[in-house]
Image: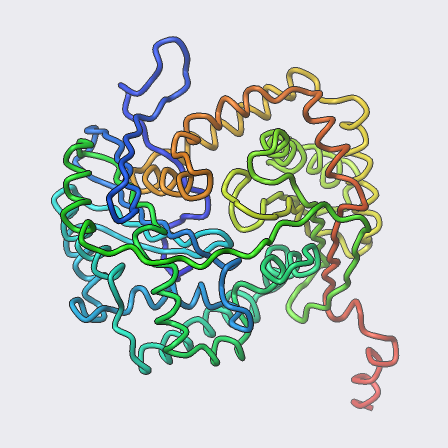
Length: 464
């Protein structure tokens, strides 16, 4: 979550014309996988349509596995990965890649941390050297740690504390929807926890989670599998595997009672609502159906919630759906489908929820007609393929699917899973998951709307 202009929240794939299947309009990505002796999984996908490459190194660690009483530590550590090593001091990583015509970024999510680069193919070897170098060790020192603690705190001030709504629909909602600490703590981190992170914490985290056996390297673009595997062996093969701590059991079932929270927002001009439902675990037969449900309800101006709440009842100003901090197929532990909407001050959270429930009830009772289902699927697949343009996103998606699913070929399966969703699947999904007992709601109101009449009149009285 470094503050750069390279979007990576929803990653995709790039395909050459030769990758088209002759009998359909579905792309099939060529995927070549090899595991090195030290446990590093290497994926290469070949495409010579551009003399460029995308590189992604994804580690199977994120906010869910950070130490207790160290909220935000996985994110803090992501920042530290860009602060230099004994061999490549601070600044060398970024300047080397940009000087070679490339760009880079990194992000932290509940179940993974990813580091991505794109550049001309001539810069591939320096990129791999740099990634292998920081996999071996970092330049652990007090000054760098203090600097990055301050950077992350400033990021929280900018993105959360001094922003209207403060990300309540993706930070706060999970704190109320989930029961286990691994799932419900603030992954951005509290200032106190960030300040208490020590150099020993940093060293232990790198030792435990940043070994080659806990990582996937993916290379996409103007390179053959043989070349990619040889380069991976050259730069990463000598790094020794390291023991990885056994993860805790962070599984959770569906909720059994609705949770309602009211929050005050000093910066908001209109009230907002976040309504979140726990979704099925990764790999469940309803996962693809819920991806379609999210698009059906809140995906664009043609969605049921937009037409019903914004255009029809005219109580909402906008509506959108999101799946945790990732997407409907990029999680490996409990997550939620959240509907976020701004609503008119003369309406209420109760009215918004009633309207949502009415739209959901129609789907549960009648299903989805063929034309609507085709439109929704077409939009999902169009968005998927539009995101699959760049080699950097192709590499990143392959690496993430390998980490989360244990199978990079999931990228070729998802479109078929979407296409296979039926109206009956959608009915079953909404009846199972989109019920009030499985729902968590935050009603975020401007502070003035929550002020008592006495408090609101006090400033006027003081002026007299």
